[in-house]
Every structure is written in C-alpha cells, then in structure tokens.
Image (cartoon, rainbow, N blue to C red; front, side):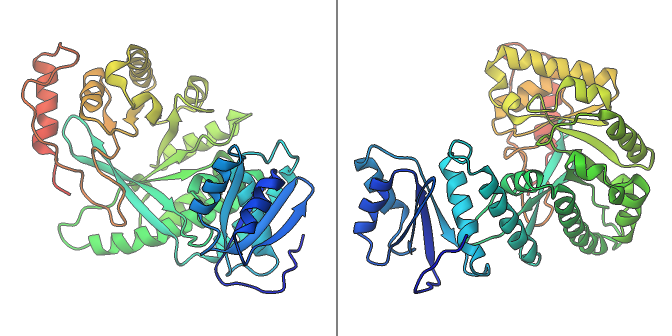
Length: 392
C-alpha cells in the first residue's frame, strides 16, 4: 500500500475510522488534510498542529462518538512505510482490527514498527525497579524494565512484545533486549567493583519461545552473562505470560538447567493469563510473582486474601519464594506481610529509575493491625520493615 501525496510534511498525524461522515466533517476544518478511502474505512493525514486530539474529540462528540484511532506519523521511517505503520497503529488503537478483517494488514504494520524499533537501539532505555524483602525492608534485586523510546510513534513494551509474538519475532526481540540490558549492567557492575561495592542482582524477562531458542540454552546464556562481567547467580529469569505454553516439557528442562547453573527462575504474573497453578507446578520455579491485580485491594478482599494464602502455601510446598507485584498502598503491604509473602515490588516500595536505587523509606505506623487483628509477630515484622527501609 502506498499513500500518494503531493507534499510531505515533517510533522503529521494520521486518523482512521470506519465513519466516513465523521472523518469528512473533521477534514472540513483542516486546511492541510488529505483523505484516502480504504476498503474498511477512511484515512486522513494532516499536519499535527491541526489534527489534534482535541479537534478530533470535539467532532467525535458531535457525531455520536464514532470509534477511531489517531497516531503520529514517524518521518524517520522510510516512505511509504511510515504511513502504513501509522495506519496499522491507528486501526489497532481503534480496537476494530479483527472486526474489519485487517489482521494481515496489522501484521505488516507490526513488522514495519518492529523494524523501526530495532533501528533505535541507542535511544531505548532500561529502568530498574527494586524488589524488596518485606520482613526487613532490604533490597533483594532490581527488575529490569525495558522502555521503548519512539518519540513520533510511541509504543509500550507490551505492544512491542505482542507485535513480536504475532509476527514470529519474539526470539529476535528477546535477544535484542537482553543484549542491551547486559551491556548496561556490565557498565554498572564495573562501577561497583570498587572496594565496598555490592554486586548487582537483576531480573530480566523472556518469552517462553525465546527461552527455548538454542541461543538461550543454559550454558550459552551463562556464557553471554559472564561475557558481560556478571555471574548467573546475579540474574533471575522471568518467563512472561503473554504467550501460551502448549508443551511444558522443554521449558521444564530449561528451567532446571538454568537453576543448576545458578540462575533464579521466576513465573511472572501468576494468577493471571497463562501463568496458572498448572504451569507453576509443572516447571517449578524458584520465584512466583503474584499478579498486581490480585495484590491491588487485597486488604479488603477476602477472595484475594485466600488466593494469596494459596500461593504462599503452594510456594512453601515447592520451595519457591513469593514476590507480590504492584504494591501501591500501605494497608495492602501490611496484609501481604501478615499473609506470609516474602518479597514485593511496586510504587510504594520504589519506582523504576534509570539507575538502580535503594528502596523507599516508609514512615513508622504504631499499632498497625490486619483488619482489627494482629499480634506480636505481625508487629515485629511491620516494625522491621518500617525501621530498616533505606532512603532513595
């Protein structure tokens, strides 16, 4: 597909909708708008200064709120790919891709988006979020969070991972991300090798398909890590849950091989998506990360408390540690401590930062209890947490 236009603008936006009347009405107020009618809808390209979110939403409200997608056009992508990528992103944003039969077109756009993503190697960022031992408030390790930087075509890491899965490029993506993380970790480790410096402990995410690729075979992966000046015992491998696992046998063998070499092995987002008790039991991991949706509001939700208790009991049976994700409220933290969860991460304990930072200090609260109950054991653990957590 090629968008034929007489003028190329450096700063453009693209809107797509099935509602032709809405798009034409919006175009009437934009001097520089160009329209292209497609089989599944209509596309408009206009200067970004004119085609704003506010202008689109004002006309949409007057047109019974039609579904549409509005994205930036990235001028650094070669023509004509830049418009195809933007079109695919706009259709995805509208939520109508499957309904209008544009799945294949979306995959083409995803491929172009990934191609552009890989060219931006030098500008992508890695953030580090602390994982904390709840009983003491001490830092356990940092999770590495890859942050795509695509200024004119913003994409979340979840969207990039999904695009890689949909187009069969998840291994390529995993290798790309892991190599960048290891390069940056190597530089930080070198700085920490001074007397008194503490070695890094990091967790990184891999898709199941990536983890089973020969390039991530346990000994090959260990060699990759050692080449960066790190040791396997400094890394935890987290299996992400965006990809179903049909045969856990090879993954189980890989998990055992990694753990034998000293790597930690974690199941991410347990309790959501594909990360079921069945998968956790089949592997088994050294760490189970409880999904943030279970953690959020656990203080006042008996069903969520029961599920956390089940994970705690399950973890003890298979000798796995528990990490609660997404801890944002103090009373949820107190409940998790009372229920026996060992580790946690979330904005309450420390936000992601471009350099590894210690956890936050939490103010002491006297007489805190769980739902009106409590006791010495709970108070001691809570006091240890609030007294020993270090400043950022």
